[in-house]
Image (cartoon, rainbow over all chains, first blue to last red; front, side):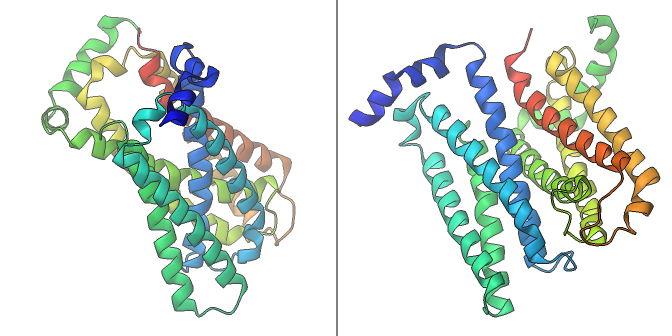
Length: 149
Length: 165
């Protein structure tokens, strides 16, 4: 709690609360980053699940790189947005779920990539892929609902 | 935009049954927003596959398979068109005069024309591309414009609540 209060009173916290355009600009970057990460996650998992199967999964490597860029944009913009009211967000159910979904989605993405490159059975790979895409959608849904719940 | 110009149209949107339900059922608006976000991610992801291939950054993505994301993009766009119209019906007098909304609609039309140009002007020729082969400059320009426009559309949408008169 002490840390959260410190964050709220930090320069970053004050900036994001008080500057006129700071909040919408960071929020927009968060939306563009989201579209990028999610876009790559969706396309990649569509492929793994059997759609557009003529694309070699390895050719997706470049796309994956773009996904990482989006993720980093969102990590940074997300941390700045968090400084807005960390004492509220930290205890908010929708926020906690969102973070859990993102961690779960990230781990599952790694599992999917490993099984695509390795010898895991197709069924298991697809199961992980479906769970992965659901996790990431869960992250978007709970993120959007943070404004309401 | 002048009030008298959009008022009749806005009143009509406001009076629709969709508008009424969007205002009366408290969970409908957030649910539509969530769908709008999911549609956005699927649409942007599909465009990424196609545009990144055409631009050449992901030149080893099979072009014909990349094109299979066109129907996915159209499906996702339809979700966002429907949910977007629902928002508009809920509170048209807020949206019509909003400068970010006006720009967003303008860019959407340009993005639509750009997509039509891609479909009627380029897509047949692009299908002949072998894996790893570079597309023509004109096609690359269309793909880059597409990505730029859609990023701008996302940003403008996000800015709408912050630029109200």
